[in-house]
Length: 280
Ligand code: SAH
Image (cartoon, rainbow, N blue to C red; front, side):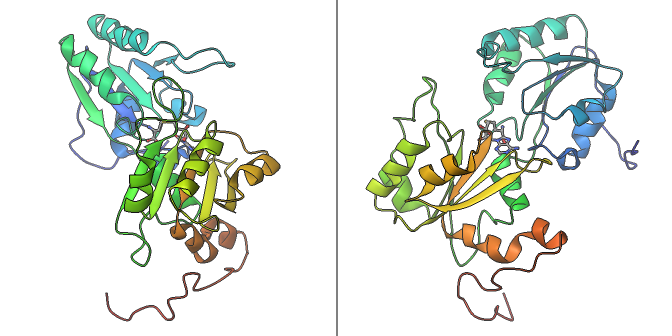
């Protein structure tokens, strides 16, 4: 087992809850603070997207599953938050482990708020979010100087489970060259229709990365116009990150996983910028 490097690592005290990101999948994408917490926790309460291998790093702890199971509705958010309060009051060192980053579409803010409202002391440990790290594993830089000066992260679900009516798709389309969609698979037909309606071209590159950073990672390269049919033809299932924008083209030169397996880059200059500038 890997040892933590020498450092003044925080001690988990009884009664504390540490709300921690587990990264998108690959256990190597945990932070050292997360590992430090796994080593000390009495209880780990984890979500569906947290890999088993990560839990193996807390053999001393009780593991409690708080995600969706077999299509049944997720454990109610309120129940999870109150369970955390109870565990804290029972004097446990509680590690609340969430996929990606706890504060990115993860309802971590709500859980933390409930804990504070109940007087429970907390620590927040950020994680690598799927919308950044998952794309990096597909060879897609979420920003690239020749493509975008901004990026928008959106959720394809709102509280009612529908396409977020609250989102101004026109504004997002105009304002952001790159759009990264979480939880977008269910409503992808409506979402892509809205983007097309807002003036994004049918030829616009789109990538869908499923179970990113795990052994099962799949990447589909598509376009806005053919996306729905391509997802269906490829039989892709969530969890997926969908990236809309020309930075997707960079995968042609940066698909490092295929290159590690012996493939050659498809195009050394997919954006047609010529030789890279000598200076920044
Ligand atoms: N807090 C998480 C997001 C939770 S919402 C984070 O920061 O990454 C759940 C959504 O995240 C999924 O529906 C999917 O869109 C995305 N997601 C999380 N892990 C993923 C993975 N390994 N591969 C692809 N998408 C992932």
